[in-house]
Length: 483
Ligand code: SAH
Ligand code: SF4
Ligand code: F3S
Image 1 (cartoon, rainbow, N blue to C red):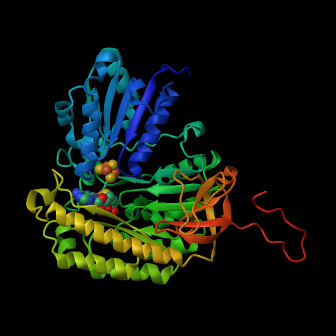
Image 2 (tube, rainbow, N blue to C red):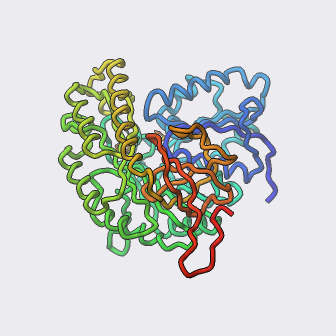
């Protein structure tokens, strides 16, 4: 097929891994049509924003970027500006009102239409709004139908990370936590058929992918009815585990209530599964959990956490927390800190509560914790989590860990003691329990497993050196791995 465009494309992506995957797929489709990517917004004739609505800050960032493009079309009359993703679905017409120079607003369920809509905008100066139904605008089936999962197969040369890939296993969310926009922006929960997922993983493995991360807003709620039987995430992991070439399997994000024993046992027993679970608690206080409508108590969370520990003592667990949710007292906040001390999460993502239009909390509860208090609680929680992460990472010093090498590290990590790690190429990789490791090595190691001896750490990173293979007793000398 001859590409029909030779235009330059700029895309900015905010939000979660789901959005990163969506952007990768949209960019892949456009590159197939002949577009080339640019980092310089000023030279782009197609400018796309893949947006997030989870907190006000994420939306603000995009509206500011759009504001800066207000006069850009005066010098580039052919320019097309598109707003994609969650904020497109949430704000719809409002995007055009706030930024009249936008040509297209495309929700999470219409991403397959992006190339066609760009053409319509450029050739006929047609403005388009392509979004799904609101959750109350039709029956469940109708609303679900209006959110189409976008999962085209990827071309190997268009993959941004050759050895790692996200694979969507479900879209949407039905939990309706009171603070959260995702059930509106991503629609009803829908799981993809296992055979489609297996096929996608096989294709990716053939393209050289070594690590697959399965994505879902509540990934462990995955379920498909097959021949009258329920097919769950544990079944899916088993199904794709033996795909040749894949070395690691991960999945995010888990919902505490759906962390069933069959899943924990699958993660324990399948050797390629990362011994890592991201299971957000959100708060350590029952009153807050109830107001958030999370559907579990802190006792339930502890019970679940206990099952993770007893099934997989070496696994690491991470969490998300919201500080300053409606009515959060100092005592409630202390309970969240207590939970962090007790569970010793590998890391926690901590967010200040941000009221979101269209959510129950925004409608019914008062955002009564002052910004300054939210800020203090955020800092206090972060300091505690960092202290725990640093202590637990320090326990790795002196040990050898087996890691999957990801590639050159994006930012140089310094040793605590003796300055820079030194050497020309710093690589990163992850242990089976998802700890980040940096070390010096040959970039060709990317995508392979290697052993690193840990010598130092920061709260987020282990720092070490590649272990050259020992001369085996009674066998001929082996070349060092770093030859
Ligand atoms: N589906 C995932 C997370 C979705 S959003 C899950 O349920 O765990 C990612 C994180 O953003 C949430 O875990 C929550 O901690 C945070 N978040 C969501 N809505 C928020 C809001 N209105 N204000 C602040 N943080 C929010
Ligand atoms: Fe949002 Fe709750 Fe669904 Fe997570 S489970 S996406 S926090 S509604
Ligand atoms: Fe944001 Fe949408 Fe993800 S709201 S967090 S980009 S699902």
